[in-house]
Structure formats: C-alpha cells, structure tokens
Image (cartoon, rainbow, N blue to C red; front, side, top):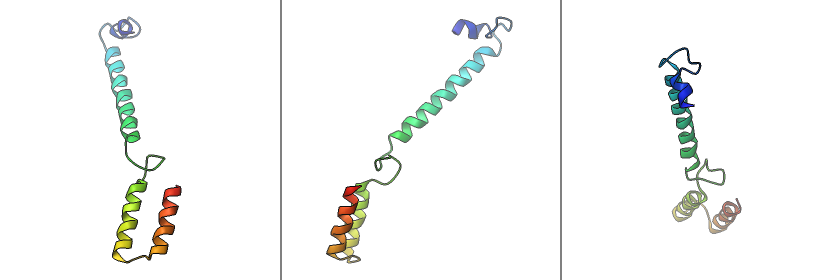
Length: 84
C-alpha cells in the first residue's frame, strides 16, 4: 500500500498528492478513533454519558443534611437511585 501511495495510487503522479491524501485520511481516522476512545472513558452512569450514581447519592445526602428532605423521602430516593 505504501508503494502505491508513493506512486500516487496510479503510478502516473510520481511523488505527488497520493501520499499526502493517504496521510490525511490516516490522521483523520486516528483522530476519530481517539475521540471515541476518550468519550468511552468518561465516568458516568451505565450509558457512560451522564452523572454517576455516586454523584447523585452525594447530592441526595447533602439535601438530607441541609434538612431539605425528610428521612422517609431520603430513603425512598436513595433506593430509587440504587435500582438504576
């Protein structure tokens, strides 16, 4: 494949644009793969795209500690979070 790229993919271009076009697409594909890999590494819920259950539980604990919700509501909401 590199020989074809060096020959311009047809042999009539010499060391013309063929190798540059191939290099361009290699860089584009590598960038897309890197982006997908980075997005898959993000922390989150099952889908990997949202806040984690731990974050939600921390917010719930803070609301309970501030007195915004009572104990029964806290336990019900905590149970609901852990079911997901």
